[in-house]
Image 1: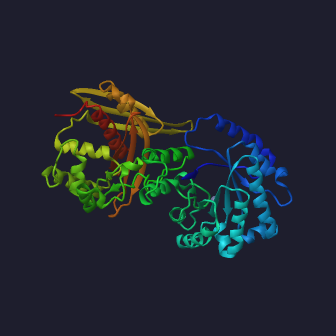
Image 2 (image 1 turned 45 degrees about the vertical axis):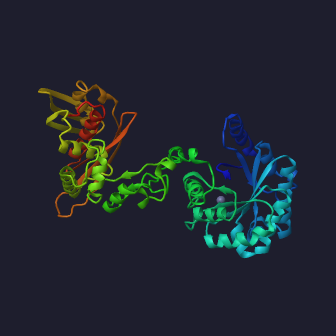
Image 3 (image 1 turned 180 degrees about the vertical axis):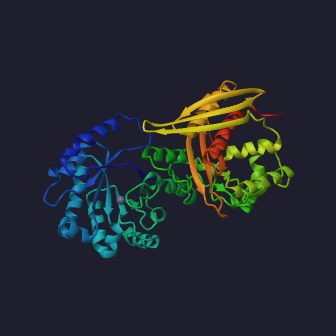
Length: 491
Ligand SMILES: [Zn+2]
C-alpha cells in the first residue's frame, strides 16, 4: 500500500525555487522512517518542451525521489482552461512523464477531474491515462477533484477502465458530497493500491479523504495491511497532533479517533457494553489508540455509575443502594443544570462524599469580591476567609477578573497547608447561560479544565451567580488535585 500524505506544490514561477529548496533541504537531512516527500506539479505547457518548462525543471530541482504530476482528463478543461487541442494534451502528458522518468524520477500521475472527464467523454479520459502509462508513470491516480462522484459510479468506471491498463491504480477523492472515504474504499476494494488523503480530512472546501478513517477501514474492514497494528495504535495521537499544529479544534465526533467515537451514554447501551463490548462497538477502541468511555448522566443508568466506581468498590452491583442514591443525586443535579459527562472530577468528589471516603480540605467562612472601575482602569480584589483544621485563614488576592482574584486568594490560604496545589493550572474556563424555563433568573454553568502537568481533569459549578458557579468549579478542581495526591482520602 502506498501513501501520499504530503505534497509539495511546485506549480508556477521560478520565484518559488528558494522556498522549495529550503524546505526540501530540511527534509533531506531529516531522518524519516516511513515518509517519502514527493514534489507535486503540473505537466508542461503546450508551447514548452519539457526541458524548458519552468514547472517541470523546478520539480526536478526539488531533488525528491518521486514526483506527482497532474494533468487534464476532462475535455472541457483541455479546451477551455488549458486552451490546447485534445491531441496536444495527450502529447504533453506523455512527454512530461517520459522526461521525468528519463531524469531518474519515480512518477505518480494524478489524472485531475478523471471521473467528471470520464462522464463527459469516456474514451478521451482513458486515452489520457494511456498517455501517462506510455510515458512510464508508475501509478495512475484517478481523481475526483470536484468531489461529486458517488461510490457506485467509482465502481462502474474503474471496472470499465481496469482491463485496458497495465499500471497500478491510485485514488484521490474530495468530500464535497460526503463520499471521500467511501469512494477511496471502493477503489481500494477494486484493487487500487495507492491512496491520497490528509490527516483529519483537512483540505479545501469540504476536505480530502480522511486518512484517519481510510487507514483503519483498510485494516479492519478490507482485511489488508496499511500501516500495521502497532502503528495503528498511535493513530489518535497523530490525529490530535495534526489538529494541534493546524490550530484547529479536534473534532470529537470523528470516526475512530474522535473523543466520542467510543463514548456510551444511553443506559441500555452501557448495560449491554458491560456484558459484551461488541454489542455497541464495531471495533476495539484501543486498536486505534482511543478508549472506551461511559458518559455519566441520569440516562446512562446504574451500570455506568457502578463502572465508574469500580476503582473504589470493585464488583459493585448497579442495584446497590449507594449506586441508586448517586443516580438520584445525579438526576436532581442535572435538573439544576449540572453535566457530569464533561466534569468527571466533580462526579468523583460527589460519589466520594456519598461513600464517606473524602475529607473536605477546608471550610468556607465567607468570601467577597470587589470590582473597582475608574478612568484609570479597573481593579479586582477578592477576600477569602476559610478554616483548615480549626485554624482561620484570611487572605486577599488580586486578579484580571473576579474569578482569577478568588483563585489567587483561595490558593494563598490553601497552599501553605497543601503545597502541591502550586502545580495546578487552570487550562480552560467555559461559561454557558442556561435558559430559564420558569421565568426566574437564568442560571450559568461553569466548566473548568485543570492540569498539574501530568494529568488533566474537569469540574463543574452551577448557580444563578457566575462568581458562585466559578467558585464551585474552582473548589472542586483544587479538591480533586488533593484527592489525586492521596491527601484527603479517607479509609
Ligand atoms: Zn484534490
